[in-house]
Image 1 (cartoon, rainbow, N blue to C red):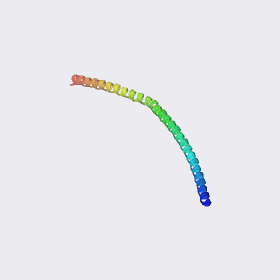
Image 2: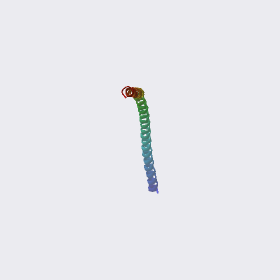
Image 3: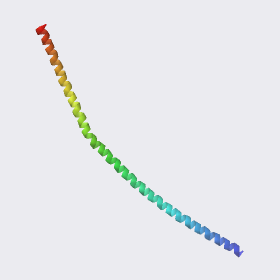
Image 4: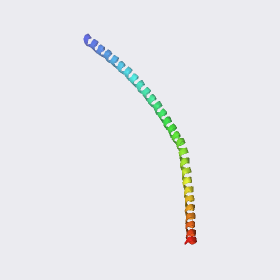
Length: 102
């Protein structure tokens, strides 16, 4: 009977040690996961900041292009107006030439 009690005590001690090791492993694992979460949150914030910065840079870099497009559109409008006036003047010249020489 004493042997059985010693076996039970030994088994309990082994189980306690196993439980203690498992608890330590889980504490370590939990700590590693917390660090990983912290690292991922920092990386996310850095990525978000870079994205916001890129959006601002795109906006700033397209502003001169938009101004140039607007200026070109204005020039095209002026060119059309000049071409229209030239066309009308040529038509008048043709009419006058026809009257004079015709």
